[in-house]
Length: 58
Image 1 (tube, helix red, strand yellow):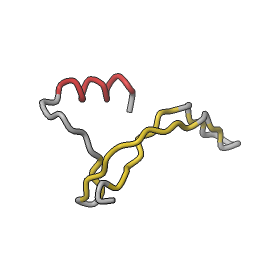
Image 2 (cartoon, one colour; image 1 turned 135 degrees about the vertical axis):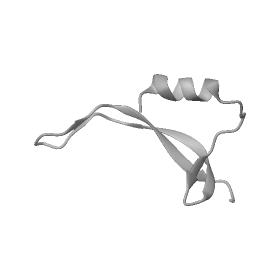
Image 3 (cartoon, helix red, strand yellow; image 1 turned 180 degrees about the vertical axis):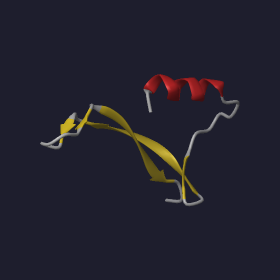
Image 4 (cartoon, helix red, strand yellow; image 1 turned 180 degrees about the horizontal axis):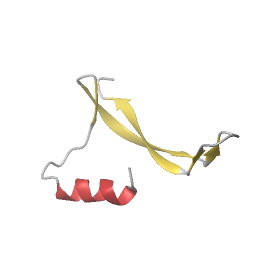
């Protein structure tokens, strides 16, 4: 997903809270970073921001 698309969706939502849903459970969000990767053959992945779930029941 492009960062601009995520920002657009967040600004257009009426809700104040944002969670990640995994198999019916809600998780808070932490941010990470992935470096650019190349698998050595055909596939390249650009550097990216990652959204990581944090268990809110802890």
